[in-house]
Image (tube, rainbow over all chains, first blue to last red; front, side, top):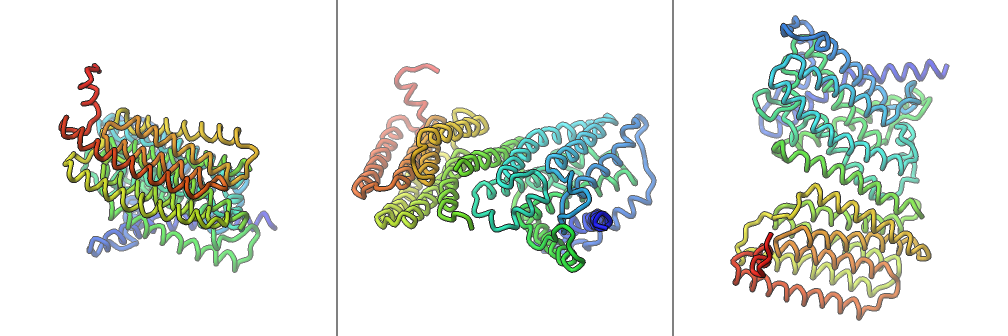
Length: 318
Length: 220
C-alpha cells in the first residue's frame, strides 16, 4: 500500500512539474514586461508556443547526423528525471532513495554535454560558438555547484534531498553562515546554468553574445519544442531545488495524508511565484555582462562555496 | 536553537572573512571604500556581540570606536583624498582577481589549520574568532601585496587592523587602554599615510607605487 502511495505521489509530482514549467517561464516574462511598463504576453504564451511547435514539421539540415535527431529526446528525458528527483511538495517519493544531489548534477551535466554536441553537429559557426561558451560556463559552474553540495552535505550530514529538507525543517539547523554562503552560490549557479540575464539573454536571437540560443539555432518543430520544454524544466528544477533546501516550509513528509499534500502543493506554487518574481526583479535591475566577465561572476560562486566549506569545518570541529 | 551565542559569533566572524574577500574582488575605488565601511560595520557588530556574551561592557566602547572611526570617518576621509588627488577610479592589480582569490582561499585554509591546532586548550568561541582573525589579517596582507594603488593598499592595511581587533575582542580580559591605544595608533597611521599619499602624488604625479621603484632605479 505504501508503495502505491509513494508511486502515486511521485507520478503526480512529475506531472505537476511538467505542467508548471512553461507557466514559470511565462510568469517571469509577464512580470518583467510589467516592470518595464509593457503589457506583455499572457502567462499562457509558452504553452501556446510549445503546442504550435509540436504541430509543425521538422526541418533538418542535410548533413545532420543521427545524433542531431536523438539529442532533443535525450535532453528532455535527462532533465525530466532530474526534475522528478527534487522533492517539490512532498518528500516521501518513490525515487527518494536515489534523489541524490550529485545524481541530479550528473543528469544535468549529461544533458548539457549532448546539447553541446548537437550544437556542433551541423557545422554552422554559431552552433560552435554557443557550444564552446556553454562548456566554458559549465566548467566554472559545475565545481561551484559541487562545492555548494559539499557545504550542504557537511551541514545536513547527507547529500539526499529529502534528508536535507527534513533537516532544514527541524529546529537543529541553528544559525549558520555556511548555509547563507551556499544559498548565494547556488543562486549564482542557477542564473548561470539557466542562461538568465547577466550571463546570457534568453529573449534574443540576434546577439553575438548569445549562448543557449546559438546552440539550438538549427532546431525546429517538435525537436525545438522538446529542447525549450527541457530548458523550462531546468529553470523550474533550480527554483524548486533552492526552495526545497532553503525554504522547505509546508513540504509534506513521507506517507502524508491528502490534506498535507494539498498544503504542500499550494505552498510549492506560492514559493515558485516568489522565486519567479525575484528573478524578474533581478533581471530587470541588472544589465548583461560581457562574456569575459562571466568567469569572475561564476568564480565568486566557487569562492563562496569553498568559503562555506572552510567555515563549516571550523564550527564543525567543536 | 542550539548554542545561539556560538552560532551568532561564528556568523559575524565568518561575515568579516567574507567581507575581506569582497574587498579583494572589487575593481573600483569608491566601491572598495563602501565595502570597507561594511567591513568595519560587521566588525563593530561582532565586537558588540562579544561584549554581550562576555558581559564585558568596555567592549561596547571598542565597538563604538570601530563604528565611528572606521565605518564612517575613515571611509569619508579616504573618499575626500581620492577626490582631491583626482586619480582615476579603477584599481590596478599586480595579478588577476582569480589567482588572488585562490591565494586568499589558501590563506584562509592555512589560518584555520594553524589556529585550530595551536589553540586547542581555549574556549570554542575564542578559538574560532582567532582563526577567523588570522584569516582577515592574512587577507589584508594579501591585498596590500597585490594592489599597486596606494589608496587600496591603505584599505588593505585598515582591514588587516580590523582583524587584529577581532582577535583582541575574542580573547577575554583585553584591557580597555590597549584597545583605545590601538585604535588611536591606527588613526595616526592613517593620517601619516594620508600625508605620504600627497607627498608621493606631488613628486611623481601618480599614486601608482611602480613609480617609486622606477625612482629608486629598480628595473622591471
